[in-house]
Image (cartoon, rainbow, N blue to C red; front, side, top):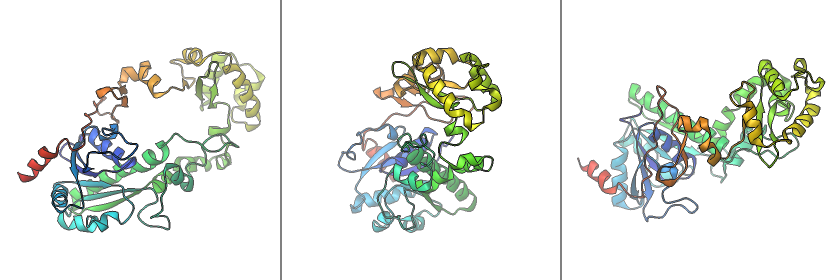
Length: 362
């Protein structure tokens, strides 16, 4: 879908590389500029999944010759991705103004936690900090328990990388119309707050959404996960009345006074119903419950690890998980015309140096 678009990525951590991987998955020619020296950032493998489908060149941006190569690369690009603190690229003479002077239509994508401006723009932080201040962490976990969210998913990926992808694609489209580049300020604190607007819409309907543990989504017995026998978990979220009725029917509870379908949204019934369901689900293991509800509209699913998910019939049928190069990873998304996209190979650091330099000479 993005064939003919070139993205230059300056090696970074987390959301920046994820955004570049997503663009590479969709067919863009992504060239990642790895730091010269052959060693990845501590804690990051030399061939991370996030580099799949990209080409790699190793440069030292402080070296005059390598800097010349980098500038030449940017002049062939539609967009650039960098994830340093504000001002770092400017100190290298590689900020938006510097590169727009050479490539006026360049979309300059900047990935940060706190944004390019504001009182915390130069402060350190991580995924959990950003979504704490944005309000996105607030509804996570039951009332009375410390909020916990899936690591990196809400902040780095949801509020960061994917908003950077949106910004870059919008910038490229705008440049094709106007001939003018732009600078994308993708801040995790902004994006994760923006994702809360669905919940804000629900607050317009029910005041319960304004308090943790009081809304149908995080306080009811029909929207939570339950522990099963032998340690597994099952997820339940039968929001619509017809699905809730089917859920009760599957459990033999349709005529039980503790589960009156007419009182599904009555918060006073939720605590007792939750206790009852906790006891019921603890009587069998996860796979028993998964088999009972499989294929029904009761909106129940087992909680799987990535390795377990890879073997599930849904995921095998859609080829969602695979292990190319021996590394378990999820397939590119979304799909187009119903066809899956195979992930590209993970390059070695600097693998395409000669190839890319040769292209610059032609």
